[in-house]
Image (cartoon, rainbow, N blue to C red; front, side):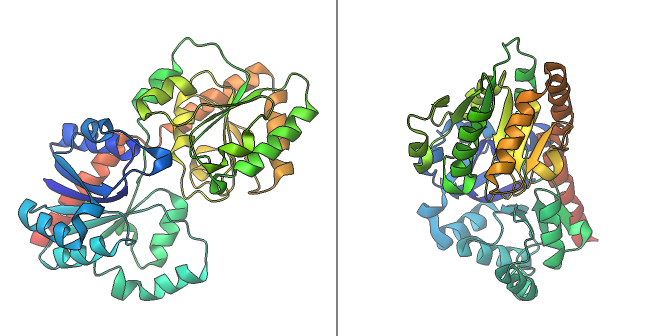
Length: 356
């Protein structure tokens, strides 16, 4: 099977899933993606580790170049980043007309906004003619796909998986358990950095012997943590180094104002960390059971957030140990093996049905 993947930002999440499809199912994959952004500048190893036969950047090709690639490569299926790029959507529509299968990624949550409702009305003319199947991240995204007019057998999951085996292996490392809250991700406003700073300040004023706060990532909001007591910023690191960096932290925080999914939450769970996340985080629906392996707080509510920090701080070590094991159990829902099997067998099924 030959698959052309038309991506937006490529990431380590997709790299490991592609590798699984290539190694386990013998698939040949070519990749087109956007150039890396400044605050998450992955090196070329991310493409090489994925095992893709070739990769090119969307900005260099344009629609004409993508059409030429489809004509020369002759894929059996196209994976595409939703319907946000015109230079992807129009070639996908023409590809379907000649019998090709198109699977679109979607991490968009159903929120009921006007723009979404307009999209539901336009879907039969804009989206459905170009896309056979929507591969969704989770339940909130599934509800969105249904409203676009896709039946259950044309809505697959999971869209996003961490390098589960690598993070699970880090869980077994004999590392000292640190009294530390950890955040991994872009240091930008939408990730709730202001709320994180304010909640952490208030938490420190309420407890004796407060935990430290370590931030791994880059972005313009790094400046608001300058000279903040207890805070360390490590900057962006390549994905291969992340499991060992996460292992041993006390708890993982994801306070996003807006976060369609949040793969880092699964990475932290696979390492065996208790989790604290805002309601806005799509992955929290699947990866946090409040009070069992962590806490969910009201998005943007600083008071609710610092109360959750204090609650984590005040747990007995035996209780946090139980949370760690419970997080690990929940992390196993989304593995690259499941992704590869879903995509490859699903495409095979659609191709067979079109021949029957």
